[in-house]
Length: 210
Image 1 (tube, rainbow, N blue to C red):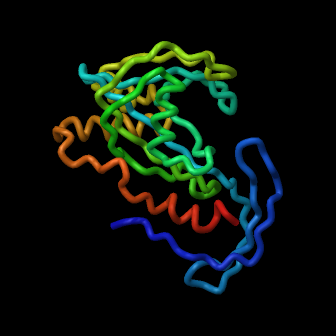
Image 2 (image 1 turned 135 degrees about the horizontal axis):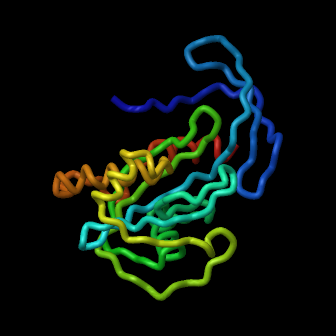
């Protein structure tokens, strides 16, 4: 069982809004397997990565950060956009970990791949597990990131917060639960850091370059 990526016949594709981070594209296309023509407006997203950092005491690095769209200070894991041309996703993940919470890691694996809102956005996100952690001096941050509050949280406490609905950030929830599952299994079946990422490849070969 797996998602199937298809080559859809695009009849028209026009940028109707250009933003600082992403654009909105209006596309007219033929619905796969039919002769039906549809028009949809889609947020063209560069993609993103996130990191669950796990230390030797079985604690995960979570951070509180303000988000304006919902006016919420939410619990998150370090994350960021794939907006540096030519940068490999795992390299971007390591950069975000260092920039946001002043950590680096020697051991990296893929935890999960996520399509955050496929009904309206092309965002594909990959979550990594980072272990063998090193702490670095605090770096200077700006804007919302200047208010980031990092916390080492016992993994079991993080899981309980997710299950109780106290942590609602989708990426954090997915990363925490995947980490707990792998911890229970002794990290025996983790995916390699360079595991294929079909969604990202599909987007790079099509929509992101259209």
